[in-house]
Length: 296
Image 1 (spheres, rainbow, N blue to C red):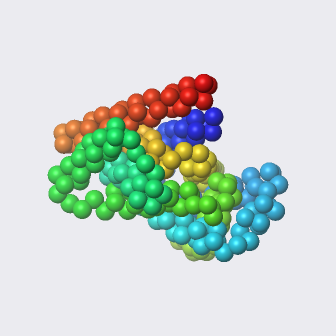
Image 2 (tube, rainbow, N blue to C red):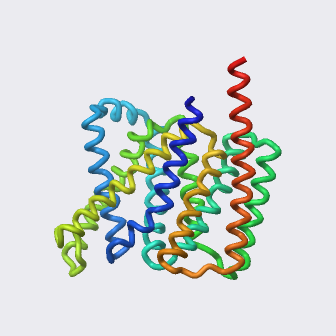
Image 3 (tube, rainbow, N blue to C red):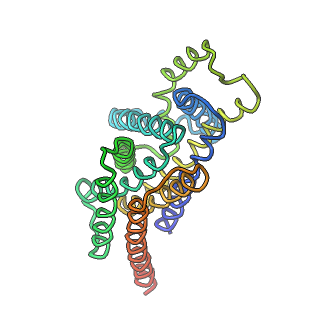
């Protein structure tokens, strides 16, 4: 039951992330300003949720030892990097490169899961990994330039997912609040400095104010779903489910924002989806086998 819940949490998170480029392009704003508001409002929303759930004693107890503090500090650095590059990419016409990063990320998750967490893949799953690696590598090589946006997104979020699996990491809601709280005061100070410029910000108009507050909500929901999934299913499985997000991002980029996609990228896209289909089939088949075994 927990395994299936983890699958649904993961699928929901990736669908949410796949559609977020549409949100970040609703208004024209400086990417740095969007990142700062994203952090500040995320903290305030999470603090409100923790207050409503009366979990402040649990939060304080969860960070009474040094190990969760160090883990959360590292996760906060990775999250800030990922958020910043993502917002910059989707608001400056690089959604295709962003989607490539999240195509690469599952391979990073699989590698970390097998090398560090000693998770084991079945033979069919290794075949899927090989096909996906071939498709992603071909897309990266033929592009002719180092896809730094893609690589930063892939490795920052892949490592972030690894930290969410750590035993010292508190529950998803509490750990996410801890990560964003670390960034809160630097982000708030920078946001107040930007408010002195001519750049439109919170309070400039009702529409913009609502949008900036919603930026926190848009950030919090999928991360909570992701954290819940990471606690319930293997990192390698969670990584492959992530192909849902870049596929949606790629469709949004090409269909809605009319970014160009070469025939090579299209073939790579199809290759990755074949790998995902193989991995998903094997995962579903194994899940049914476990259910039948448990019933017996």
